[in-house]
Image 1 (cartoon, rainbow, N blue to C red):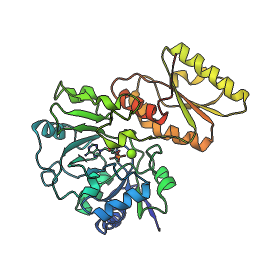
Image 2: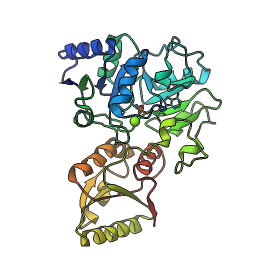
Image 3: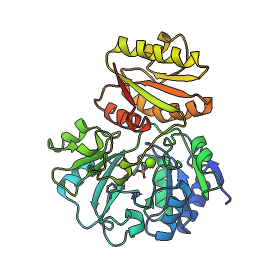
Length: 349
Ligand code: TXA
Ligand code: MG
């Protein structure tokens, strides 16, 4: 398959590329595009055949529904009802990294919702994405633009790496500034429940409803009897090729444990990467150090985490060690992604 790649430097001058990509969406083809969370792989959300191309390109399990992306806050044509709380959240957080689950209208085919009666919808906060949706003149279904199971792409080069030859068009823009996928909140229940933590934190949501919680089933290792309500959360995800281990607990002990494991591996002629905070970067004499940002700015860690996992693959290391982060604010989303990428291989110290 021929893939065209166009990088948008200046949205006014490069409008023609967005127009070309919008034509592809209208003709039921596939387009990767930037959003503020991660890059998405889009297709016409209203056409089952268009949507099936996304599943094929990504190798995505058929039972994993897609998020529908819109360019304005009026979603009355896509859903059956919009509860008061959903209206408030849309008003406050759109455009932005919040996906709202609602009962879907029949206009959304089963292929998009993977047979569910509900649909996740979000309005991304990215100029290129919004233009693309507007010019396509239809909602765009878009999962993250990676091969299923791999870390999500936050840079266009990573979309090219995973999807070149498998999709019709790749639109490039800036690096995604949030770096983890949107928060998913199920508004078909009262109080609403968070099905995936992301850029909009639990603390921010609770200002609108103090009863909002994170779904129990996504907190720990997925188990056969506790099925997560977001089907995607049950799959191994975000995984680099090398094994990833998380080291969690007291700071000094974490550093000592990492050093000990690095020594063991290096003795066996293996290569190890260490993902750590800026504050700890100079504390490890051996191993390839990848600094994620300051421990005091969790937003930077979120922005860098997927790219760091992918760069470990470029380095071809045998093992990746990563210190755990505090589970507050966006730290909840960071640890959710890291735990899953590690297959819950966590060493408590
Ligand atoms: O930030 C994002 O949300 C990115 C960008 C591209 O917008 N998209 C994204 O899509 O992360 P994806 O497909 O990688 O993740 C979608 C998640 C999956 O875990 C899926 O199971 C869940 O959303 N989901 C979608 N529709 C749902 C529904 N109706 N009920 C429950 N979970 C749903
Ligand atoms: Mg994904």
